Length: 393
Image 1 (cartoon, rainbow, N blue to C red):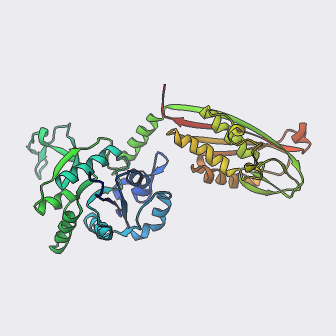
Image 2 (spheres, rainbow, N blue to C red):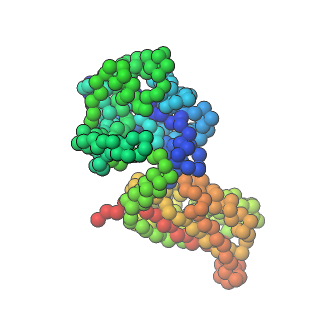
Image 3 (cartoon, helix red, strand yellow):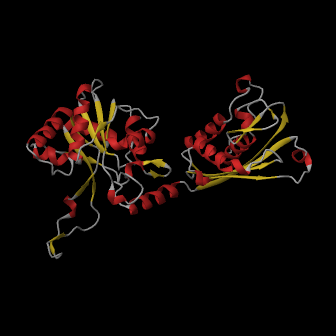
């Protein structure tokens, strides 16, 4: 691809996804703990040869869209139309000001597009002007009549399953879409069909069987199972922390400010719950402990909020391609009373960690007035973390 050539992407995400079952539009549902649309957009946003990603969404979904793709670079979303074809045209029109040379058109319901497929799409459009990714048909296909009887068996050697991103010279596919809209044609099922109707020759390039479209509830179940199978290295770590009481009027516990007659003696904010969790996660990763990553001798961490320590530990899991399966904290103290704040603490840990609250447990117990916790000299916490990583030797 010439260095001066600009490649843009239209990410079609305005559909309602009714065949995917309950749970809202399928592009905003999570798969493997990540929104479908985030997975689909991330591959393009991070590709070195893509200059602009133009999402097209239903205007009723703007809040969901913003939350789902937080952290990714993209153009302001365009409003989708009544059909996929109308939505694509809206995306193309929004890109006119960018004057791209190549445009890739991708369905947000295909979350597993690879960098390789994107690169092949750009190369193919640069070379041919219009190209689509395809995979071979492995099953025998039958053509049936109205009665359901078989009428023909086509040669499967010539059959291909079309995928996205479909790639085109921007000017030619924009003109084809405009012509189709002007002529009242709204029955095309993909952009290649519009290109064929407009008289273009559409080439093919190698697709990817993993680049499937999520359509039915069964698709979600199958892909969740596939992702889980890739994370077969299941690990559990434990953590422990303790802080003594000193002067103050509150303590931080599991990310929550809890009014109290005393405060913590600590280098950071002394959050025993989060500190124990960080150690548990780092232990599961076999990645040192909280002191090795955030040494108390470093003045940078003096008075620091412990939520950043937990975020860091979670990011270490993500960097290894892993997922958090469960987080559990047990707090040992006489006072303050944890029970009334248990769910608030669970919600705060879930928010910091980016996991569902159903995967977070907070428990509390006393030491029956024995020891330093029994004498109300401080608080102790234990924690465990279960994570899943890709298996490696």
